[in-house]
Length: 110
Length: 114
Image (cartoon, rainbow over all chains, first blue to last red; front, side):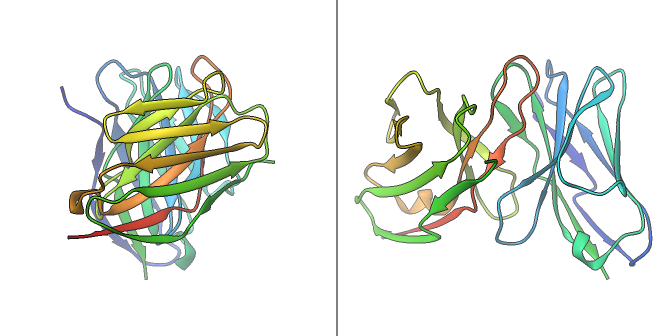
């Protein structure tokens, strides 16, 4: 049984560009959340998707947007990248309680 | 009210010793308190979790102690091993069903010396 799969694992982008990160949840999980983890910090909640709708959102600007597909996979899009967006982006899938995290996408903005 | 404060920031323990990490929260609506372990280059992995209706939960060498009145909870790692060296995060969430974002503490870097 595959866990949460994220792609790509590493990414380098230039300031002002746009990026799309992808997540496939654990089998049987229908809720996907995205988190941003800056170096040396705890993960910060970005938003959560369930039934293809954004259900909750953290304190992130509208440059961060997402989507959930009918197969429960999800994308995180970030527009107009800033240097401060450099972080590990984590996807977590959930069924009832108990989040399973992927290994993340390391985004570096230069 | 959304914060979860974690201490210490770093911890060094001898092999076989007890590692203790503490967390405090403000929002009394939180009803789920997990601990995560994270190794470099990996995502957080759920270790153990507790709900506020119990004061202690033990799984192997890992124990959560929960003090509802003080709004504090702690992770105890008994017989600490070098393989336990990692970053540990406490977290809290509220809500049932498929809602409930996790609010994480700042993390504790544990080093277990052989």
